[in-house]
Image (cartoon, rainbow, N blue to C red; front, side):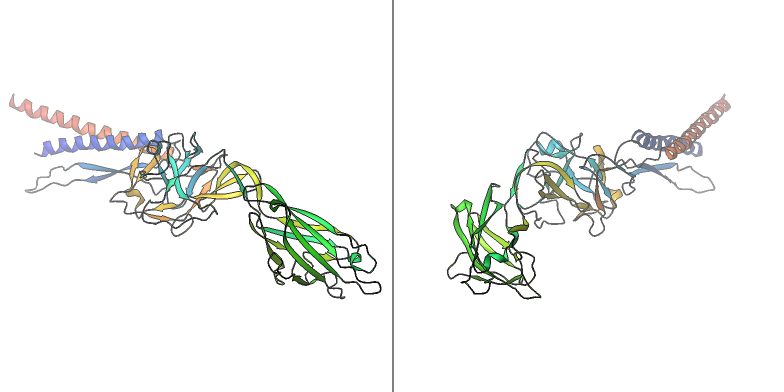
Length: 439
């Protein structure tokens, strides 16, 4: 019985060291695999019943696991959609075969810590092996809707149309113009000054608001009126009047040249002027636009100084039609589409998934993982929120393998394997001696 148990222990020793050797071989083979997590072997002794002073060898058994919670170093790249998780958490991904060229449907959810994502022929962000990045789609205004956090519902394959066009309508104009104070004095010709201000309609087409400034000329001998009538016309509405205002300027020593008051004619189109914000709203063909001419007494918009008519600071939001030129992901997982007209739009948010026991995840090809009973249920976090880390763009997580340490273990494993083989050889010789006794 003792010799037989020793033989079994030697065979078990060969088997477990062969398993250990397999983990070492896998680790060394994947020493250059981005996102690879080391596999390790853990030995445990086995004890069988003993009695009567006779010892029976129980042998050894092995369990293997992947140390998913041990990250590799993060290396920089030149691709904006090379992503790595810095800290705790996993990127939500799915397989290219399940996407099948079409978004939507019940797609299997996998986890990854890094990936070199690029747009494919259908615009999906995926790696060369087909791993497809998933995220929450943004609303047209760039906001992210509320999605459940204990399930993958709402996650979609991130799809970027590289031939995409976009534009933004103008919603606000800041009007800074100096009006000549000499035009409001007695004897001036009272010529109307005109200024055309471009804006972009809802289709990205360039339109204009024509602003007419007409001075109020006093009677001979009367002091300067310091008053102007302002009329605004919209080119998209066949030059219809969209606003009429009367602006009075201060001529005091402390506030000379600044707006003192703005009044609106009875039944005149346009909204009323806000003396605090300096803005009023007019309606062009495509909708309302806020026009800021300056607050009372500030001199930040319209002014009346000297004898020069000069635009000083005219700005607006909105943009014409632009082409998509690049896609970037920030540390909080927001996917931004950049257009050649200066527009940046948020199109997706990439969350991070956390599980209580990362080492309990099931491993799959291409450095992918899925949840199991041992890992616990997952929760979806915003990147950089809660226990999760952030997302690093232009970066990939390197392999967690330490080749020097693996080679050291390789030598130890080879020695252990040889020693167990020696046990079997010795037992064979002992059994041979026992057979010779019978002879």
